[in-house]
Image (tube, rainbow, N blue to C red; front, side):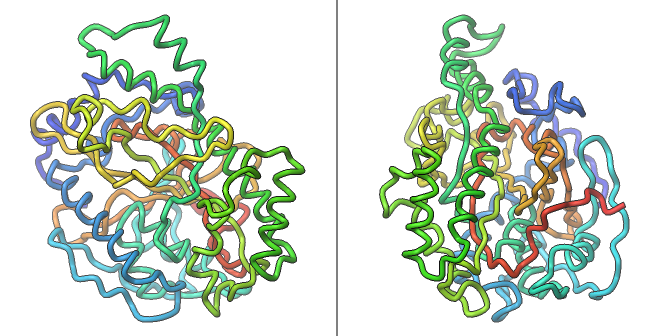
Amino acid sequence: MRKRPKLLALTAVGAVVCTTGFLPSVSQAAGRGDGEKKGSYAATHGLTAEDVGNINALNERALAAGRSSAAPSPGAGPSLRAPLFSGGREIPPAEPLDRMPDAYQAYGGRASTVVNNYIRKWQQVYSHRDGRKQQMTEEQRDKLSYGCVGVTWANTGPYPTNDVAFAFFDENRYRNALRNSGPRPGETRAEFEGRIAKDSFDETKGFQRARDVASVVNKALENAHDEGAYLDNLKKELRNGNDALADEDSRSNFFSALRNTPSFKERNGGNHDPSKMKAVIYSKHFWSGQDQRGSADKRKYGDPEAFRPDPRTGLVDMSRDRNVPRSPTSPGERWVNFDYGWFGAQTEADADKTVWTHGDHYHAPNSDLGPMHVYESKFPNWSAGYSDFDRGTYAITFIPKSWNTAPAKVTQGWP
């Protein structure tokens, strides 16, 4: 990545680290192994305010492209052929199928590499279809080039829609903190309430809830060769486990998720046979204060009421998520609008040992932004988030069972 003077821009972009009193939640990295605390996304990745604006604009382009392309399954159909963004996004070149990846650079709870090397690892580990390695297609490389969301997009096929997202909010912790503490010196009431709300989310429990539900869903998919049989199995399993999701309306996002997955309708996907599908997990970090008609303070410091999970089911209503970034708290600030992490279907029982794959920004090797980097982060590192985000959800989607984009075991950094 090219080096350039960034001190002035980062002074503005990262100023919130000193003013918001950023405090990781109980599930975040502080005191959980690597001890890392993260400030702004821009300061961490060496981005200017202009870079952040370009990233947000391209993220919106990715969402539009995902909707308009009908998200064909990887390896099928023409390339998206999205025009180059003004920031210089480029599709990474193809990599030979049999070329082995180099080791990643590891530090703390994270390992990193350039996008070309990730493609090599993907082809060796994640690409398998019916047990055979596949070369990453131009369409998949096009999706990947969008950055953090690109990693998840390339692995799920369809652009992630976040319809079935889970989180955990500790209501008692929130109420007790509001009752027994107050704003820090120089902290506004809105800033205080937003901080307390953020600290009351437990990402470990949100992730575990998603894993538990995915396990039930995958059990229901077994030997269910039509949607009716799958839904009957799913409701039965939920009732047997006294799970509140059994009471969801049959037309809800939860029960219609499989039906609305494009690859379920593909001949090379599920072809309307649920037993050919599997439930997998990814994560999204984003900002709560997205209501443009709401108070400016909530857009700056977070909306304590927004995007809380249903206390019975853990489901988060994501219908009001418009990918709107945090509003500036001082002149010159720009905040990234979201961050995605890919998990798949790993079977590692200890959440802290699970590996989350994500990226820093879109691939622009011939611009000042530079090439995209891909990260493999252990859960404490991933769940720490940045000051750009105060919500972390764990979403379930479906991919064909024959795809190996969700291996049970991920070796971080490819030693």
